[in-house]
Length: 65
Image (tube, rainbow, N blue to C red):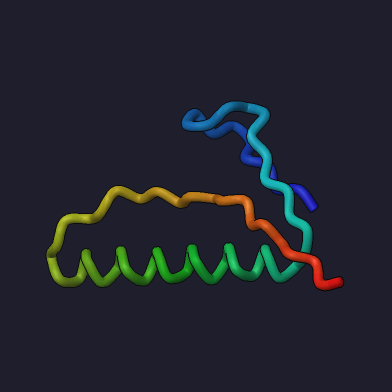
């Protein structure tokens, strides 16, 4: 599966994220949901919003033999 950001001035026009499984997409959703909740709490408390950066790392998988 591929995810593409279209017409976003902050990224290269060829930016893509490749997903191996539906679970990876669910993990991304959960992480972004947590980020949104944290930002809303900051707004409610009158705190400055933190810089919003989502880092994507390659997971190294080990295969059981």
